[in-house]
Image (cartoon, rainbow, N blue to C red):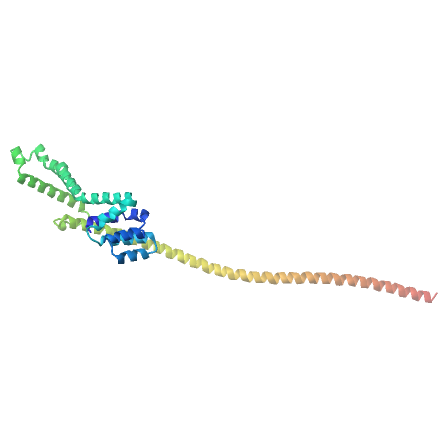
Length: 277
């Protein structure tokens, strides 16, 4: 298959995955046209998902002969005319790509390079020059060479801050690459500095966390001991309350006993007195 046809298939793959269903009838039709082999057809049909079948079919088509693309496109025309048209449009775009590049190149030459070369005609290269001299290829080439030298000098001025003066005669591409490397290195160094600062801050935060954790552990121990003391205190308070109740009970019984004793004494005295009367 032609490389442009392969690229056209790749560009249309998303649309094929979205809309195209490679039914057994469609695959048999391709097989009968010798676009794919029976082995390929069997492998595709055994795949579980439709999207997987489409991807496998496109890969097979890209490995087949020069007529595979055309036959596949024509088969699509029957049930998937929009996909067939999309394939045809993409192929035309790819086939006209070189012409498009040539047209763009001609446009750049005519509208950008030629006016640039005509500048000396407007300003004059020297007081003795005439139009025929300015049209001479050697004069044009010399003018372009002067422009390139001027560009090289200006670029060196821009890059002077990042390259050494003894390297000014190196090609611009080398100077630019070195400048980019220096910028990248500076960026890396700045990034490392920032990262080092962040690591330092994280270590400080970790140290504070460990400190707080140690203090929390100590406080937990103190709280645990205080809870034990509270439990003992509650137990003592309960015992004290019980003792108070027992004491009150004993005092009350004591008062009752004293009262009974007094009554008994009075009764005894009364009985003794009655004996002597």
